[in-house]
Image 1: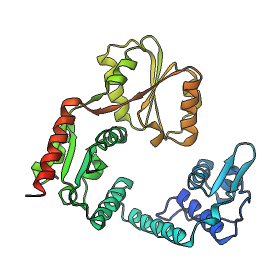
Image 2: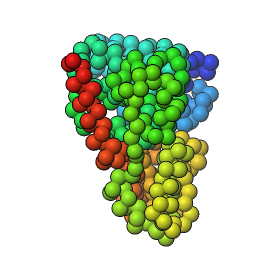
Image 3: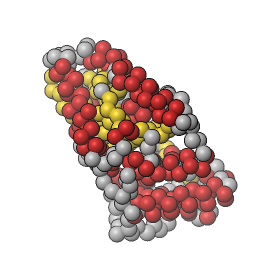
Image 4: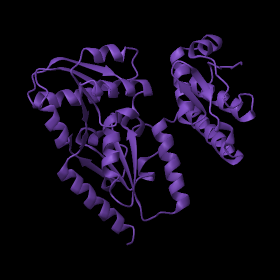
Length: 325
């Protein structure tokens, strides 16, 4: 079983691997129940990192193409070839589109936003208010998108600040309303030409988050997140609560450090509210197991505060009403 990896391709190595395995399954070269090479075997054969192979296998399992069984190996799912040819062609078309957009240097956030907005045009939901929330870290973006998605008849998109500040698109062309924090208002003021569309909000940890954090003094604390910015936000909250904690350290998801060792020496773990969005399945399992073993796991929910949220709702209604004038 041979796999060919082009390390000079604009398509990431793990995506190349996913595509090749999926095609072999659909063509019948890899039949249902067939055992795939181990992570070590495939990494050695293709000359790539074992972590890359493991990531590809996890994604294939998520797509329902393979099944990973601890102690036995990775096998092609029985139902993997039962998908309709139309669905296969559709998925292949999407893969080609994503590859092309990545080759044009668009970020995943931009690709998602473009796709959703074009879909919106076809569905002709003109009564919906399109909102883009912009911030400098992905954890806050995820929290706030979840928070405002409960408002009816809106389309909520998230965009990291560096992507918002670069060409080639103008935010005004896509959004009915651009929301950010006071920290980034001046920066975005230079790229949002229609200032009526730009709105700032105040963000703060939720009340349940504060209540849980207030109980952790005199304990060893581990902050687990995807960005240094979010870690800094959490540390500022700890300082404002005047917590006297021991050995406060940060573990950045995606680093090469050993999470299992990090967890072993911590009594309290503070993670993003939607931490599973930012970690691998293995890392997510380790965090959940730590909670089951008696460690305190606090999901840090950093969101729009109550007053700002009411202002956002009023602004959305104002924008919606203006569509009918």
